[in-house]
Amino acid sequence: QQGGQVKTSLKSLEKARAEKGPMSSKNLYYTLNKTNKKFDLKSAILTAIRNNSIDYLNPAINNIGYKGILKTSKEIQKWFDMSKDIEGEFKASATIMEKAGTGGALFRNLYRDFLQESYDLLKLETLKEAHKEFIDIANLWTAVSNLFLQVSKTKERKYIEQAADILKQLATKEKNAMEKLLMI
Image (cartoon, rainbow, N blue to C red):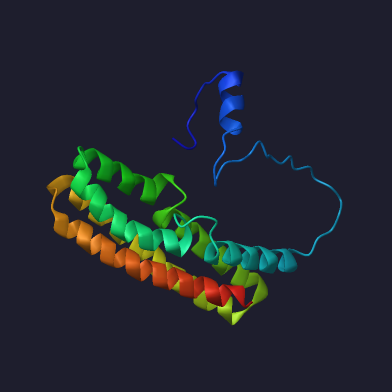
């Protein structure tokens, strides 16, 4: 669980950090030290938003970004059909999407707030529009999470089908929002 306290051996940590794969750290880490060097916060924000948009629109693998959301809209139906523990699996996924992971409403709420703060500083209309779009996007992710909870309680396929439909909408909405942000 993120944010929890865990214990592991140094050897185990070393092995985990050296894992390979598309989203592994490859032993990369950063140490931040405060300096007296001045930087342009406005420029840094714009660069960060553009870079995030580029990465989102051009994912390294099809499991992330809007492509990953589209893929998920199909895969959750297969997952439902194959699951041996619908209650546990879908309940855990709902919790991760809403409260513990980088996907779902949790991240979208953080990004929504970042866009509002960026608009407050930069006064760019595109940021204001994107903030409004991410309000809707985050709410739709909460709806998906709630549908997963319904699936875990009832084991009814109709909730998976509704979640799949919302995920397709989300893929389009997020792609469109990121395309706008790319142009700032």
